[in-house]
Image (cartoon, rainbow, N blue to C red; front, side, top):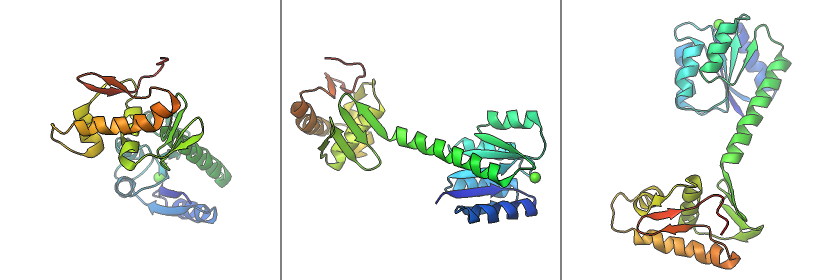
Length: 228
Ligand code: CA
């Protein structure tokens, strides 16, 4: 179940949210001020943050700005009053949504469901690559061409995903070596050529397609709208 951080200084509201969310099946961690909220929000992993804006110490806006600088976790602001400027600032600082106090708990549940769904969709999309007939799912390491399963080794897979991540960019052999193999030295780049040839045997030759193009003397590219 999703893990939620509640940052709220009013004990009664914090406790109420905690109990209701736990009852709804969420795992809940509570922080009672901005510093604690920022600390937990940046050090631990959450699926969503419910963030009160009027906090002692570090303001909710500041907590939001700091967390957002390193994380894309969904943030729903709780605003004490119908303060438009606070909401606008919060959304500018990267919050995803806001709820005005006093709120009905059903509304909170609904907003949380929407935010979690949206975040999940984003993750799903970013881990799924489709190119020509090729489908690569980086979550479960599944690769297929025209719905036919292809078995790649871990390195072949990483190399393919790295090139798909950098679609339309010519990636030098040295960069591939460093990013996919973790080697920082040059001179062993023919290992990249060998692995590209493995992928070509398994995919290109079998399905009569050209996925990875060679840029002679430089490196490799997977190019979009490449119809030849
Ligand atoms: Ca407050």
